[in-house]
Length: 499
View 1 (cartoon, rainbow, N blue to C red):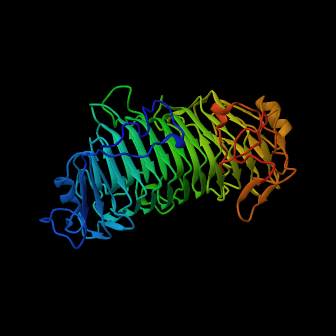
View 2 (view 1 turned 180 degrees about the horizontal axis):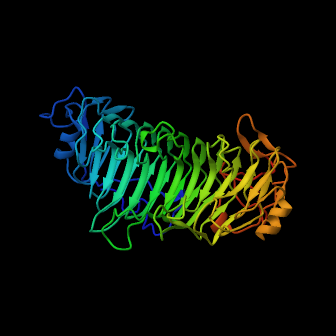
View 3 (view 1 turned 45 degrees about the vertical axis):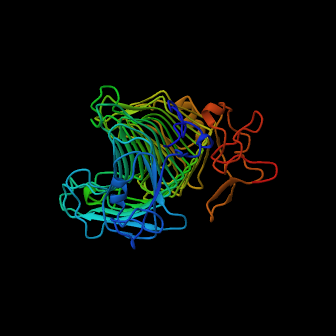
């Protein structure tokens, strides 16, 4: 059996270093699967089974199934607590080529209402359909489930190529908390690569509904035509009142790039895909991620009127070369939800809005209240837009201060309706950013996208110490975030011996 202390009872985000190693029961058996085997064998290393699904049926709760190198053209449903992973040194492939995507639970690997499961070390690929009503998925966790680990897998080319653009959907890795019995808890999605997906209206890596206690960490998500990582609430996924919201989560140390909906038929040519999106989630820490060449670097809000993303902390992240904006908060129009009591600290934004949409580095839209934006570095492109406000959204509900702004072009801040061209006039109008500065941050190497602070940078020791619970304990590079009582601006902390 899996050690029940793997992540602990997550009622708030936990540190990555607190993850325990997975243990097994002394009574558990290890079985093997190989393309050279047969399902009438015993499942030993020398006489392995042929199919992964047979191994899932023939094994018992707590057993381990090791899969040897080869291609397995099958769908896999986990039936009980178990470890399903690649054999040492092996590279097994679960391939959907020639398989028909079924109408329901259409996943290459399905975990429905099963506790204590590990799926590790597989390449999962080529699950495609032209049926707009089917939903191809790489890995699906649903129902009430506890202690599920999805680690070290390569999921790619999961595609819905249907013609009904309004209804096509697909997922790379998805957790659906949709059971009337309770939540998905202690979920770990770690060290996976997910790429080359065509998800239509849906997302690449997502937790949706009654998911209470999750970690999405150390993943690489890229080359997809919709959202990279998403934490969703208020979609009607959970039948339990008050629990239809992904919550108590950690999204950390992921790299997300090449995410755009430009050629996604569901978006009609618009560039609206987020690198990381919190759509109605709550109590989530998003830290130490690198996001670049996506449409919207990060968006924190809710798409449902009267609902909000709340108590989200976004810290020590790096954004650059995003197509439309680095960070957006608030609903995208007056009929959407908003952003409440969220904190955005010690992030670095560099030359986002490459399409010159006017959104700039940080965009504030509709229904924002009680949010904090401090200790950030915003270095705008030749467009010069540092902060923008959606037309008609009113005065932003954001306390902004101790930031460093810079552009070599004429600068622009919009706060409510008016636009300001100097930090002084912007600060006076917004009644904020009184400790902020407009200076070149002097990054170490812009060509290499190294946003460490060079010696003499005005961002060094220029921040306000909000405490480790808010700013975190480590910067993007793993350096201690607080040096005594001082803190640098942006995602990197300078050291005596290093950058």
